[in-house]
Length: 339
Image 1: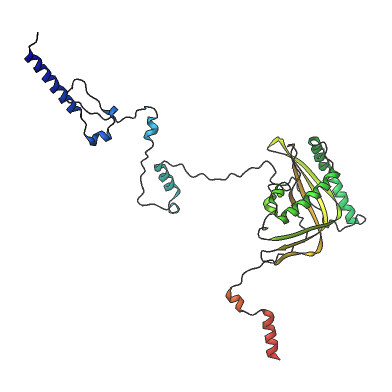
Image 2 (image 1 turned 90 degrees about the horizontal axis):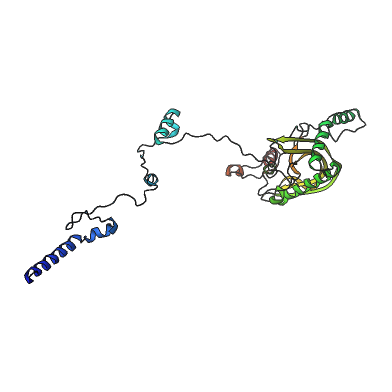
């Protein structure tokens, strides 16, 4: 049996030990904010003075390399150099030090499989077409040459009918003239949405060139001669499954055209005077596609056709040019002074 004095001594020692342990486990406020409770580790065997260990590792060992790559050390060039002043070898070494790939020249061209980039065997119109009579010698010779070139055209039409059983050349020429009229009216009305259904992607930038900020008045009056197909070709593009057909239609019509600039001044043509227009329009269709449409692809302008007159443009004169009198006034002044 323990005496009362020994029991009292034991209780006092236990209370002292508990109080010292609590005091040693107290963490200052500055460290308490920066240290998580899970980061405090008490080393075994040291009950009175625990050792604080701060864990530097991430709790998730995965993606260790990716976390290290978040910080990239970049050497800032204190003296930046102009690439135009360096030789190709110096540029190569500089890019190799920085870990950059060399410049790649971009020479690729975009490919659009909804139309072809050119005309298959362009049709060569006979000279003075529409002016010579069949009864004359030259007119009969032209007729004979046209008949000799119809072999490939016949084979191309036969290939078109293999994909489109309802195709008829006599019906197509009237449809082609209707497409021609709608396309020109869409250009005058600036209806680009409708124009995309009437012309190919190759012809669209050509027909819309220099039409912005201009007023176009176009009118179809009549056909001088019935439209007729003079040339047809069908060819494969890239693969045998992609077959395009092109038909050249001769259109001899009477129409009016007037183009006004943004100030309302007449640049070209007239709304009153009608002119005869002879054109060779190429229509194209993606016959391998069941939803393909006949659209305007290009126009053939022969070398013997006379050039169109240049359009009148409105320009801004400088102060020096406006101060000078016109030439007619100078002549009148000289004549008056001589009298």
